[in-house]
Image 1 (cartoon, rainbow, N blue to C red):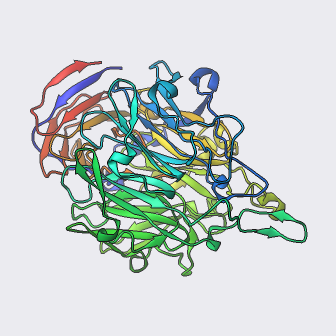
Image 2 (tube, rainbow, N blue to C red; image 1 turned 90 degrees about the horizontal axis):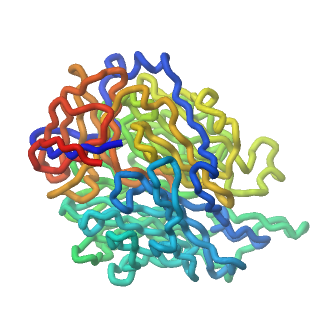
Image 3 (cartoon, rainbow, N blue to C red; image 1 turned 60 degrees about the vertical axis):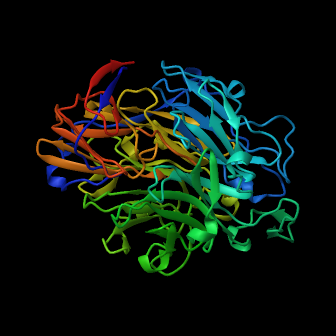
Length: 569
């Protein structure tokens, strides 16, 4: 697969999933004519042999339930998505008998991967690195993706040296955020063209002072629910440049909201050009941090309607994401919860309030516990579909319940006219299986123009799912290279015109659970064979326009430079 260097000049608008009225969508006519499925890629083919170790013990330590995350990112700039996987590790409650390490797999470009963890220097595995999640970004704008790993312990920032190796620069950067961190989100909250870092915190916990939860008479321990532990403040680090960050958690208002946070997504809920944060909390109210400008955030989860269930009760929020699922130009929100609590699809009412409209998602998830998830256009018809990775946190739940299982099925929902239809039964044999799923990342690992999925399982091997059929519809892939905006182009608005019908997407950051995703944008165009124009409104305010760009190709778009197509591998 070849890449094209496309240096752009002129007009555009981008939005993570805003789409025009369903009657005019280019992909609707083809939806019934084809069926997208996902196929499990066996380890013998992928060469991914890594297995997650959840440190399970009879003492039932809460971090054992969390699993790990992972991501797709191109660490060596060869145009192919590599994979990073996060494992547990030594801690105040776990001393593994054999070394436990995270894993970096280099994409060989032929459907297989090579383990380059040791060479790259990103294994972690020492005391205090009981892994949770990971997020990649070029924080110093040198053209190479860096890596941030969250832990029960001390977090780690790996700087990409550009030669296949990384250096631990955590102390220099000032982003350790000790104790227990979960998700990390890179975004530019003050529009100064540098990527800042949000790090969510889970509960106050110590493996040396374990609380007994269980049946005293039977002497049987269970995992304590997070409700019995105290909340903690999350972190916001401002990128000062020169490889250093300043902790602005208190000054920004982020630290004032004590949470038990698992997932976060950076998006713009009020279309004011400032990136906001939606954060899921476990057994506490969810947070919606609205960016007020001048470095300040206001938490409005309660008044906006996304804090509690319709009954006014806190739920067990894990994974989150944001998109414009109904095509009205406003970002909607999603959060996955534990069984019996229902998952929430929050429709934006355009006035900083939301209404929960889960539709078919509600009954389908009643007995499930959701973690990793993602809105993405799985069939390239220009609207955002939804995949959910599920699994109960307690491996003993089947002793207590006849209906709820520890291992649970994946779910796939297709967006049809702005509503979600459960298409799991026809989306591949893998949807007939059960998993102890946790993290989920999406990306086009084989560069064929449709988006694949990586599932990270708690205490088991990950599952790589190849998208089969999504590229039957046509598409354009964009690799956005900023020159005046933040290096991730987070907050860019992409608008593409297909036969007079316009589609819009906001480039968000974060989302899912302990995971992040392929940073490229694939624009679906259905059965259309031509795109009239693509416009990108960069976070800097500049607008670049591409006229009649080639389809079924990845295009490298450089902010503010004239259009110039050059064949590039």
